[in-house]
Length: 297
Image 1 (cartoon, rainbow, N blue to C red):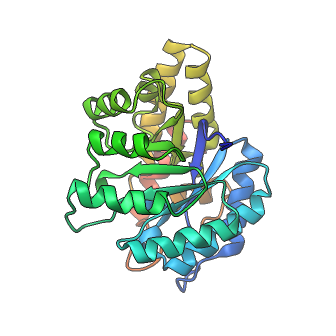
Image 2 (cartoon, rainbow, N blue to C red):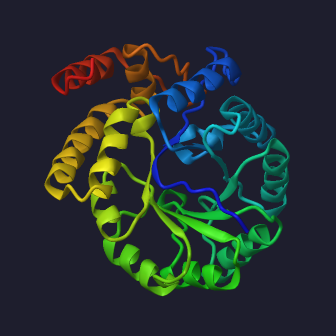
């Protein structure tokens, strides 16, 4: 099977909403175009920071279809499945296939406590339901962290499993997962947090599925390039810059700060979907001041 690469700087798209709470598909298409023109390597839809838990299964499919259409083959698109039941997850998977995604990402169910055997069965059922290349997304925010041994077993038993998105920030877990999968197994290990791109890439990671790049793609593209070029000291300095940028954007609730920051650079990412809150005036003042200090606005 031929796999499209998601190495380098990949953007997790933020879902824009109208003030009344509807998905703003026009703004979503414009966001995807902004990313492509900036030189981002690929696009990732419906991650947790995309407000995917606020979307219906139908909206997850439609948002991804709009992104695929806008990308028009210029960059690959990976659609993430975030559902709590196998039945709904299969529905979204088939919708993504029909939309024309290049790869499927599967995130573990949220909130309820699942055993590792239960998580293994959930992932394997979905992996075997598609011929597309698949990514495991290990999201600790779900409350159900995948054990390194569970991840490795899934890779050993499913040849169309080709990507792994790691968001745990646990470097013992990261190294153990890499070791158990095996360095000879063809796959792309993708970082899932802007806080740790530099060290994860030094350990063998291939890039980052970034939230910061949804607003500021250039610093993330530069960081990945510096690591790949072996400019280690410069890459470390760039990671420290990215950490300051991340801290600035997280001044508001959830991704509200990112949406406000986008407005400062001429990118409209719409509103939050209630009950998620918008950034307060105090949040906005702090974000703007910090971004000015970083030379970004």
